[in-house]
Image (cartoon, helix red, strand yellow):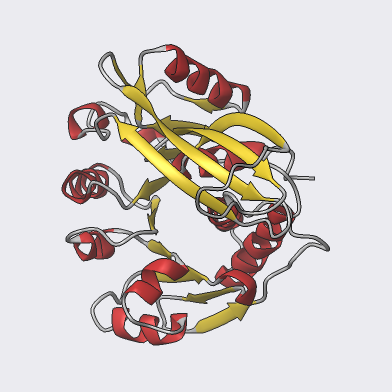
Amino acid sequence: MSHILIVGIATLDIINVVDHYPAEDEEIRAMNQRIDSGGNAANTASVLAQYGHKIEFAGTLANEPDGHRLQNQLAARHVATDYCHFVRDGKVPTSYITLNQKTGSRTIVHSRDLPEYDFDHFKRIPLEAFDWFHFEGRNVPVVRQMLLDTRQRCAGQSISLEIEKEREAIDDLFPLADILLFSKSFVTGRGFNNAPEFFDVIKRCITDSILVCTWGEQGAWVRDMNNTEHHVPAYPPSRVVDTLAAGDTFNAGLIHSLTRGHTLLEAANHASQLAGVKVGQIGIDKLIK
């Protein structure tokens, strides 16, 4: 298996399951509640660890009780946090999630009072020891430094970059990664109605990267460096239970499959199947059968 470094955010998720989404000013009782580790990078790391990869998570964690709880939850999922930056002042980023049992949809209110992971801590990581690098596209100026440093210190290892949200100057990161993982919301926010049209525009200036875009119930599109495009279907479960972290799960499945030498089409199909398993169950544990 591979040694993978994942850089991004870890959050504390407080998840309330309700039988319907509340109207404004409505008071309802949660059917159940759970508290779990979350955040895009931490979720992807946790799923990749289930395959048996050696996973290192690099991010900022608060040195307070909830931060310790988060660290323990990651450790229980075999995700190492040795390269994290532990901050005394601040609170663990917290996502308050309303999960609609009828539809499986999730609504998130996020609270953050913690600095982003900085380059001073990143540059201390022995990057030469890793086989794969995965970054969240956030805090763009610093992530750009990290990507450039990774390129300079390493040769041949793959770099994947998740682009979920629009951020200032995020396009500056695109040429620095081998695999660009776009969300549907990012693409539609750019004014495109489908992934292929978006790929056509991106490929005019980003010719050496693999492009990936998930599209919910319509599956996912991928385009390789030779501009060959494939579509893979979604694999919905018999009942949609929980869509939280489905995209993070897809990313993990894709990375795993590519580390095993599978083709891009095979990897995307596997990732889509895994995401389907995820939305049919609560949480991200025990996804790999």
